[in-house]
Image (cartoon, rainbow, N blue to C red; front, side, top):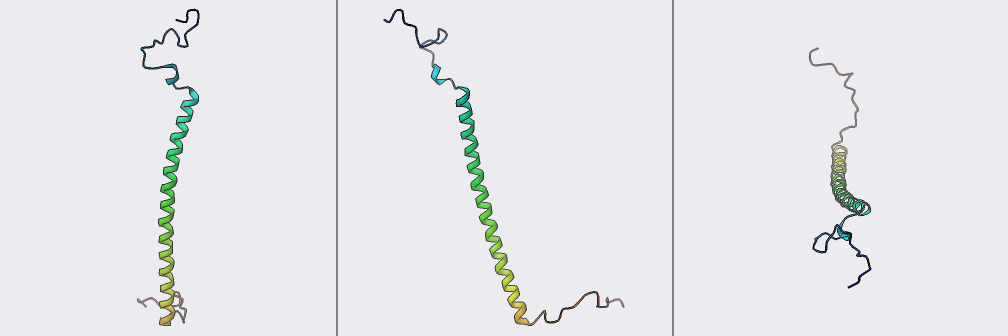
Length: 94
């Protein structure tokens, strides 16, 4: 064999050991995994927020349509021609 050459593996790691030096995560690899996890959660949160914004916009559109219909009904019935002040009315107990 290659007598005189040093092994790439430290003396504490044998060839029968299932964990090789390349399998041991480094701090940079740990940080990268953490960032990938955070990115995944961020994408999920973004999807949830987009869905919520879409539902709220649908509700706003429905409320605007309802307001238009109420204004149309009010103008058709001729209501609102005379503006009353409730302070000028006498309460029923007088």
